[in-house]
Length: 93
Image (cartoon, rainbow, N blue to C red; front, side, top):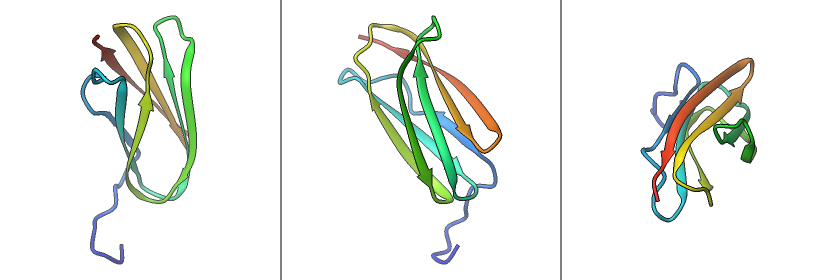
């Protein structure tokens, strides 16, 4: 791009470790071209706890969620174009 930063060549989502004690889940989203991104947080029963939708430019983005959830396993589902990615993470209280 114009400032010399290499743009991602594919859509990816990374969970930044486990949820912190303050309940914040940080995600890194790599977006190859401008587009709509939908991200949802699910518990193990498939219930949606939170979701966010954004139009993001190509590049590297952070997205955070404040979770008031007990310790356990949870899932992030991210959709961009025709791609869907699921990542597992833990809440430790």
